[in-house]
Image (cartoon, rainbow, N blue to C red; front, side, top):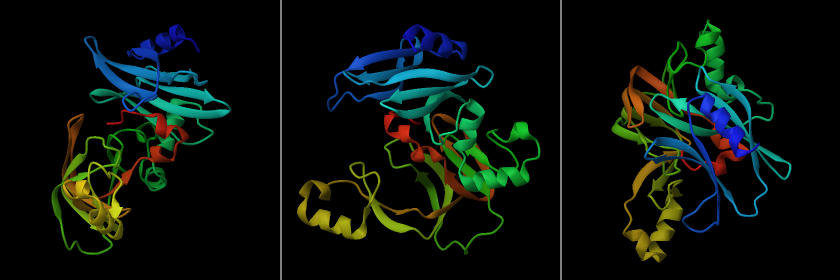
Length: 264
C-alpha cells in the first residue's frame, strides 16, 4: 500500500502518518512509533534501507478511531492495532493469526483470564471492550479484575508502587500493591527485565559500573493485586475499590512486538 493510501486511511480516523527510510545505527531504529511535531502527534513508520517490509490497512473503525495495520516481510505477517486511547495515539502489536478486524484485535489483546471473566460477567456485548465494565477496569495495557478472594493475606503492602512491562516505558503507579509468589529479581534502567539474585551478585562482583546503578527489588511473574488509585500521565486516574488482580495485555506474544517502539 502506497503512502497516499495509508495517509487516507489514517486520516479517516483523524490521524497523520509518515513513512521514512532510515539507516540503522545505535540511534535510529526501524519500527512504528508515535512522534510529535508542531502539528501534534503522528504515526512514524520507519523502514530500514533494503528492508522488504510493506504495510497496508486491513480494517478501519472510524467510530473507535482505530485501524488494523498489516506488515508483510518475506512471508511473515505482523499486525498492529493503531488508534486513540483517552489522550494519545498508540500502536500495539497484535497476536493471533486469525485477526482480520479491529474488534478481533482488541479481543486478542485481552489475556485469557480476562476474556473468561468477560464471557461470564458482561451481559451486553457492546460493553466487552469498554475500559470499565463488570469484569475489569483497564488503563492502557493493564487490566484490573476484581478479586473474589486473595490467595493469602497480604504480608507486605507496597504503597505508590510502579508496575511496568520492563521495556523502559513510563510506569503505572498503584496506590497499594500486594504480590504473591513469583521470582525475586533486581531491576535497573540497564536491566529492565531484571536479574535473578545470583545473576545480580555475580554482576556486581565483576562490573564496577553496575555497582553505581540504582537497583530496586521486584518479583518477576508474580500474582499482583492492586487497590486504590492507579495513575499514569497518559491516562485518566482509575480508582480500584477493593483488591483487583492485575494482568498485562498479550502484546508480548505478538510477532510484531519487536517492531513497536513507542508503547505508553
